[in-house]
Image 1 (spheres, rainbow, N blue to C red):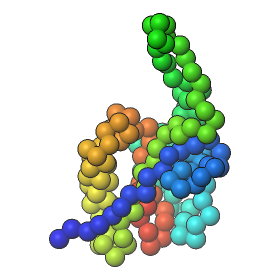
Image 2 (image 1 turned 90 degrees about the vertical axis):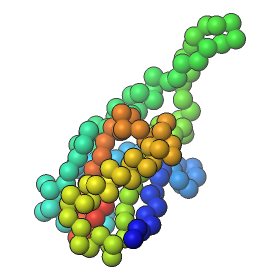
Image 3 (image 1 turned 180 degrees about the vertical axis):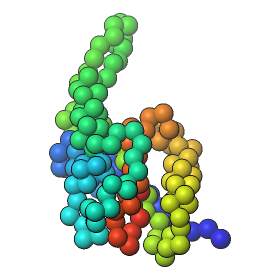
Length: 156
């Protein structure tokens, strides 16, 4: 028997988004996701933070700085005359994506960390199949498995 788990997918922007629906301040979100654990949740037990598992960047701030630097380079385009030019991105442009996976606690209460890891990998494979431009494995900069949230198992 399966279960439902809808990932929360957000476009990451610089600063507070004008329209917060499906958008988030990338710097804040990544600092919460990374070792900084920029969070006010009551469920966070910082004494367990050293058990968190990271792939790619460990520091959310370093990851965000990298993403901003890449975005600052802009995008290349070709004019009608064949000339290649660079265009800066708009200041409110989405410069990255985050998928937060949080299966229901009643489903995962008896899961081992290995089962969570399998779930994470299967879910990301499914997202990559649905939208490969955003969620392919080689484009992933950071992944975090938070083991420091009491009574909850958060995965980003």
